[in-house]
Image (cartoon, rainbow, N blue to C red; front, top):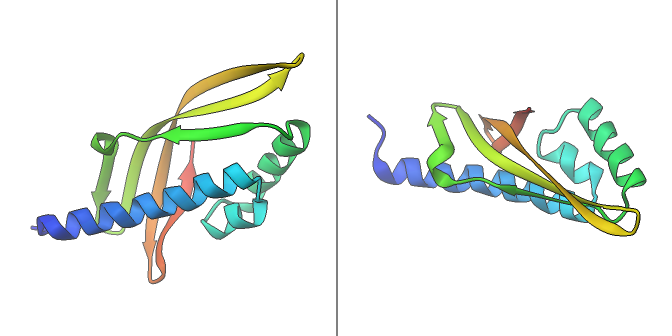
Length: 114
């Protein structure tokens, strides 16, 4: 059985990986997206999205109750909200997203996002 403090520590580290992802999104920094584990093909998609929507904002809301950690894998169910400008007005889109994280020797990385 895993000690409670170990679970809290791992949850904090998964949160740090998600924070790095969100920070990269806020900065529209595709290199940092790849550094947190986002696959090159997805990074190219983000690059196109940001080029088409230079004022876009993307945020993730991830309740701690939807984080599941098992060994070297974690899954977090979140709501992702994108705000883009359309016809001069901000338009928001929200959808459910699931992050899968993999624990590496250097910490947690995002291994899948769908």
